[in-house]
Amino acid sequence: MKTSNKDFFYIKAYLKKQLIEELGLSSRYEFDKITKPYAEKIGKRIGHYYTPNQVRIILDLVLSSKKSQSKSL
Image (cartoon, rainbow, N blue to C red; front, top):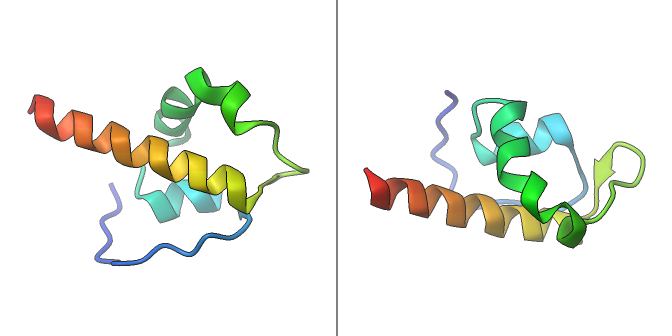
């Protein structure tokens, strides 16, 4: 699993693979598991890119998912 010491996150358009790497997720499966229940809220990608608004929503979902996982440990 990729670990990062970044204190910031640029909100811009991302490819799925780029977004997974920036968020520090281990796989596409993990990304899909987090985002699939909220697919309607996130919306469709434009081409292969998630828009900056979609990235904000996904970032909130991933952060809340990581917080809930750390509480259960």
